[in-house]
Length: 127
Image (cartoon, rainbow, N blue to C red; front, side):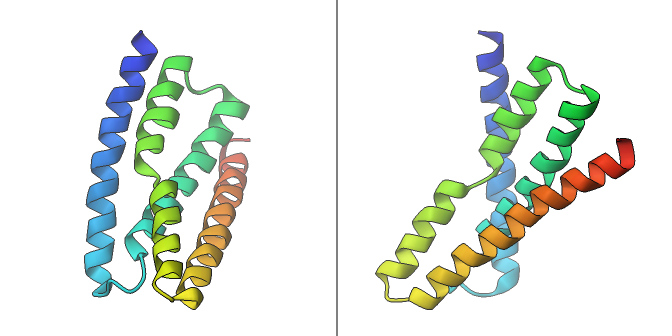
């Protein structure tokens, strides 16, 4: 039951962060034509999970409880892949095929690259 509470607490924190960061980025973009807020959150979440998972796997830095809190809770609540999928389908549905394809391509390139790059950085810094 302790891990369930940790995941829930982390999820609350991550969801609040997602709402705040996504809204801020979207407002800064001054457009509703493209989901920049969701892209930013997914990118930042991928950077964080790549970096931290590299440390967890190679350095054993996190206990099982901390991994539950951070990876499942905070980062699970923060990243918004379901929102990405829904927004992409909405663009497609609304006849914005180019923007839908651009959204998919940007998420794949930036987020996969972020996980790879941040894992490499963590490895370089801490082996």
